[in-house]
Length: 275
Image 1: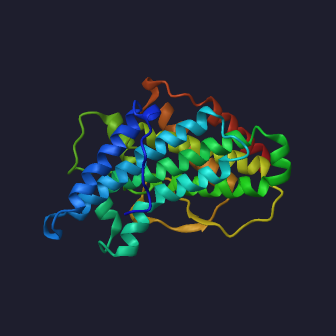
Image 2: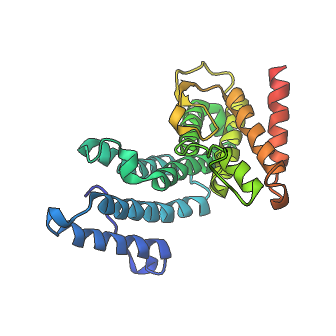
């Protein structure tokens, strides 16, 4: 675990995330110095993953504050995606566990996928406002969109929906409906909206390009135990996920007043594009 290091400069010491990342790495260093029998691989991996999440979050915020500078953002985003992919790669390469997801846990896996997808969403959002760049490099936008949507759908599919039956009791019916739809947090809803919006950008800005054989798990029910992969169709996936988003926001989450205006406008765009 030596591919990512952190140097906390005096100017950045006040940043909460870098301080927390530095503390995690120090603890990791101490644990790695202990005898193997005393080291729990799961604990080591969790510390390493948390340090990566904190350090990359600090760097992401800088990119967002600077509105993704055109001359350097592509490489920086690529590096951040690489760092955020390290925990899963590390487990697979070292065969630390037959099923690496069990070692990392659903929440960390969801967080890693969410962070990669959300980063690409923010980057693509910035790129769609650059008309000249779009004219020259729409093929790159398509790649970023496909990768980002893939990460977000992956995040939505790690956990299976809670099956409602006589053996499961809920005091709150709305909560039961959310869990049965595979919605476990606000982040799950944001992932649905983000991926739907990215599908809209793909359909709007990349429609004239040749289709690519980019296969992702396109199910959006959270049914991670029954995943299937197929080529991604921006309109089809966008419609499916945004219809579910609107249904959830205007159903069990009606009192929470989640905004569905943008989702409905995109669905209207898809409808007219189809016709």
